[in-house]
Image 1 (tube, rainbow, N blue to C red):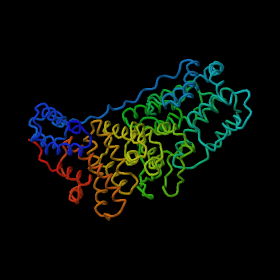
Image 2 (cartoon, rainbow, N blue to C red):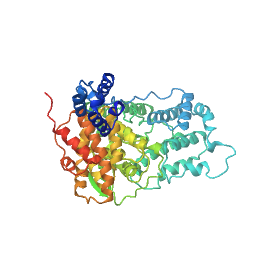
Image 3 (cartoon, rainbow, N blue to C red):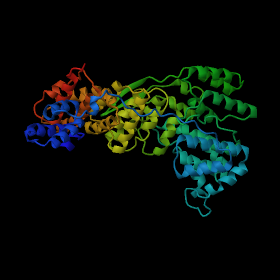
Image 4 (cartoon, rainbow, N blue to C red):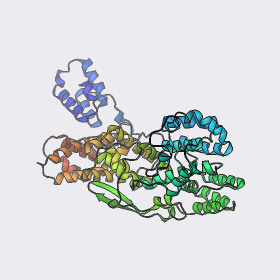
Length: 560
């Protein structure tokens, strides 16, 4: 009985207590009674009151103290270290990136180092990179099979990922790829599959292909778009300083690198942006004037239309003219509108490791990135696919956390695979810790998705139980109080004999149990629509028992 009192399932606790109540007269041993009284401190508050009536003094439980919400520390972005000082350091970092995909910060720092040293001393860079290049398949003297290096690196039917981009840059430095091939790839731009991801992939690809071409024909002194922070954000004063250096050296600015720099530059801090705009105008260059206009402009998000496609809820962002005016063609697509019924939804061809780089394309507009990844994340719940590892990064990114971000997290919480659900829980807690979680929005989304069948209640119950176990009971309750009404209402109108109703009831019972636990621990009060109706159903199923428990908890008087 003492072990059962500490069980995580409150129904097991109650069954154990009922047995103790029934057989309390047999507890003649004071030691046994004291042992049970001590273990009863693990019971829920309502059960502890009953245990006290039977066992006498009961040990105080965690719920007897004033509730304090526990959320994880707010993740802080990390400032990128300066570019590698020597060619040997560049080679070391590039080799490490090829061995493991690395993150955005490591990739961008190594990329900037390659560009700087190709400008300063290309021979020293080639010599330092020789051991790294020797390990690549395209550098093997005996390699004669297709694809040849020119065929591979000149193929623009699919966009580059980070590792392929490094191979392209190394092959360029090594002289393996012809200049004509590099130029043709820049001229044609990336092609291949068209899907909502394509604009993000095209922007990433176009910049790297132009960097490769410039390494061969007109090396740049540095990259303008190298971020200041690990999230991809670029401080405006740093971009102004880099443009000033270009002007001092009379260097030609790369169109795609400058476009990426504009999309990365921080504009949320209006005071810093306006000061940087003043300094940019003083440069007297076309790029300085363009940067000044960009920093002084608003930072809008496009209007979004909510659509239902089958059992999925998806979003259609409208056109964003700001990202089209004056940008290279492959960047203009970022501002094109989306359609969930017209657009082709191919995404199996993307390497999952490139997704963090997509967030760094628009680090201050994660809503746009989230909307373009939404269908794929929906399939982790609907089609049992894999792939929510990007969610914690989405929660840490900059910009508004709106409808698209919350829908992405909602689908992740209902993902088929536990590892994917854990990533969604991490994202949920990060948003809560940053004060960016709209619990009513997320709960309403979850209720709709459970009602449609896109998210299974049992999977969702597992996710929110995990989140609550970290100490975030109030956060989880604030979500579930908005998530429960729709599926409970649907359950009340369904035919009792339907098999789907039995499955839904089991999942809702688990969800109600988590809701009751969180309400009890956080001291929640009030009413939730349709809980009373579920509690009034006949029988003693888990759903009915937990609905009654939640109803009674919410109706309790607050202790003086």
